Image (cartoon, rainbow, N blue to C red; front, side, top):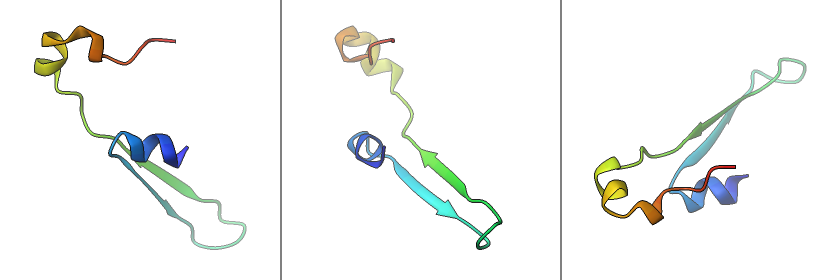
Length: 48
């Protein structure tokens, strides 16, 4: 997963209070610039 996020210039952070407390994973991705996406519709990500 982190390879895909980093390829899109994003980041993943984790936080846990310790064993048996679970963990929080935060994934941050940059916003898509719709101006350049509409100029080149082939640059949009494909839909599943």
